[in-house]
Image 1 (cartoon, rainbow over the protein chains, first blue to last red):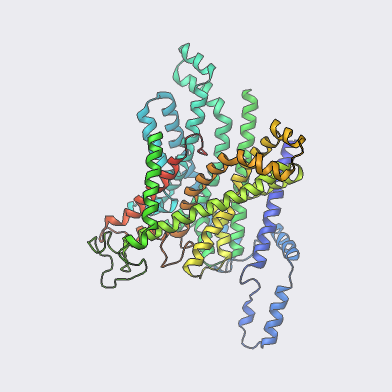
Image 2 (cartoon, rainbow over the protein chains, first blue to last red):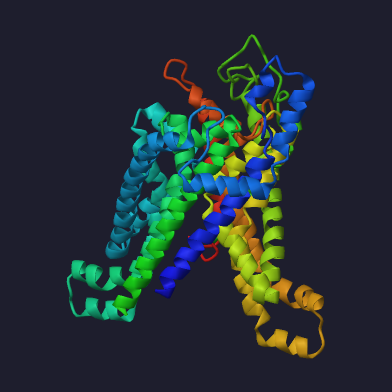
Length: 285
Length: 268
């Protein structure tokens, strides 16, 4: 129970501090407090000055308190560039990103883990060299370049996140599985003539499972980060594209809300995978 | 592995040297437009042809490589410096300082890297001179990329600070600064060096991503981001395979940086 309490406290703490930093950035961002009312030709310069002074007098603390109060009511503010509530924009675009991220993670993990298992079990240098070369090549390419190459080759961009996740999954899981495969009890099992599949499922994978689960959490963060260039350049209407448009339009309110939400999602995913890893490790022990 | 490493270092040296001599080797300025020759094919005058604005592609590749190859190490140095100060202080003094450092790194590492970069970049002026945009881009990378390295350094300094030779030095009356300078820092050198080499390709890749999104270095200053963005205009109708030269060079350089590190030093 104390672990759960610690986890909740950590998430709440990070969100609150992150929110405060975000609110501070919004408060001091260029263009904060600029009101459409200022464009009213009937207002004289004194009135415009008064309006500005009124906006600028809002302290960061007060601004943050208002921000939190609105957040509790599900109001994330209005996007300055798109003139729409942030909640509506998120509701429209988040499912698209989730779909791409889920597809990318499935593909990346399937490819990465399959190659890692094949490398460790066959111990054939050709498989290792081929997979390592592919992983190294993909690690050297920015996600934005991959996005352009996908557009040129007319391949659906939803698969692209898989190629971003694959090299990390492959390299990390290959090292983990190789280490597990060289443990004395695995060697004994091999010497006793146990089937390869059985050795893999009962002796190699369970030993590496906690670290693999931790990697699963990290790969979610990786996929969300790569979603920005992929969605921006492949014209996918997700939150990555939204973040890019917000950055170009300097829509800080929208950007900070997006960053906070992605942070929350990755934090939850990381904590859950860490938790699952610990539980699995304790059970295996 | 030793030979591959040597080859990677040789490649990096050749590329770095050529880019540093860009003013001598390049046939023209990176910004000069040959308006009667847009999208020209390779020729004696323009070895890699020209881009859609008629600028010599070879000159732009050389100058762009210089920008990335000079400033990514500077940003990596800044990262190592910040990580060394923050992580070192946390690990050496322990207690609440270490807890604060850990909390700060936790917070920074929880924020998705590219989202954070976009947010901070958007706060800074976008319509700036090319030189200012170069400084902003790499300073941002250097200032925001220290968290991971700081954690590693903090843990290592903590271990060193509790080791026997530090206890002996402390009992001999060495003060904190001397301990840090004479005993802790020399032991941190390999870690700092590894972090430095790891950070360079990461920053080159991130700059390329930012540049391709139009949030990196401003035109007409070339960088790998802006050079790679040119691939977007590639079409079967006006196919010019030389457009892929910056990409090939990019992959060679980044993979060379990866190969310089031995297997044990790699993060994954």
